[in-house]
Length: 73
Image (cartoon, rainbow, N blue to C red):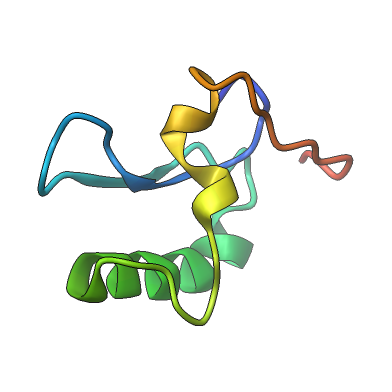
């Protein structure tokens, strides 16, 4: 689980072709389709398109940004 109990989805900082999608805190089944669509666009086109998942980047912790979610399972 991530420090803010929210998913981590996106490119791994410092690596050109490494991507991640994990730490869904029990909501993976609900969020997996959207995370997959967003990550697919990021990998193929270099940017999020339909779903902007940039707030879930793993780099948010180094930047001091967290994602607040009240419905943690």
